[in-house]
Amino acid sequence: KQEVTQIPAALSVPEGENLVLNCSFTDSAIYNLQWFRQDPGKGLTSLLLIQSSQREQTSGRLNASLDKSSGRSTLYIAASQPGDSATYLCAVRWEYGNKLVFGAGTILRVKS
Amino acid sequence: GAGVSQSPSNKVTEKGKDVELRCDPISGHTALYWYRQRLGQGLEFLIYFQGNSAPDKSGLPSDRFSAERTGESVSTLTIQRTQQEDSAVYLCASSTGLGLQGQYFGPGTRLTVT
Image (cartoon, rainbow over all chains, first blue to last red; front, side, top):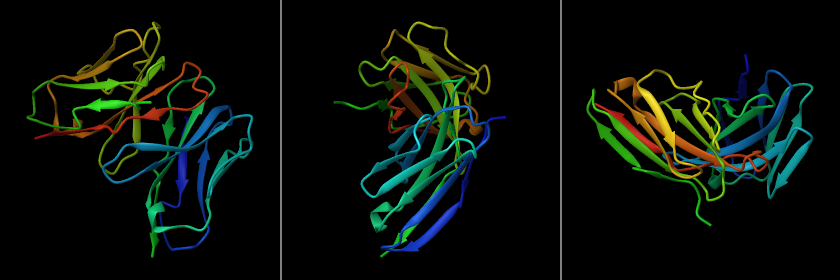
C-alpha cells in the first residue's frame, strides 16, 4: 500500500531557529514529491517540487531533499519566522498513478 | 495569470439534499483532480480527469458522489443525498498533462451538512 508519513506531527520553535520536517514514503518508484503549505481555512500553496531524478530543490529559505532509496524527504527551513507558522504537507505521486498521496502534515508554530 | 478557482467557498446544506461544487482549472491544464479533507484528517483523492480519457474514479467513496468535466475546462463535483460525514473541505487541483510542474490547488469549498 502506498503511504506517506510525516514526523513530527507538531513542532513549536522560537523565531530564528533552523528546522527540519521529515517525510517518509513506502515504495521508492515515485514520479515526484511535492511539499505544500496550508494556512488555517485556506487552500494549499506549493512550496517545492522534486522530480524523481533530482536530489534537492531550493527556494529562498526552504530546501527540500529526496532520497528515493531510503524512501525519505526532508524540508529544511532556515532562520524560521512567525510567518512560517502553518501546516506543512508532503505529497507523493508514484510512477504508475496520477493522484497525490498526502501525509497527515506537520503543524509548525514559530514563536516570536 | 489566474489560478484554480472554486465555488462556492462555503456551502451549508441539510442532510439528504444534493450539492454541486464547481472548479475552474488553470487555463491550459489538461489534468484536473478532486480531493477532500475532513476535519482532522489528511487529504483524500477522489477523482482525476485527463483530457478526453476516461476519468479515474477510484477514490470516490460511494455512488452518491459523481463528477463531470467538459473538455479541458470546468468540472463539477456532485454529492447526492448528502450525509453528515460528507462535511469536509473539497479541494480541486490542476496540472499540465505530464504533471512536471506539480499540482496547483484551488482555495477549496467548505461543505457543512447539518
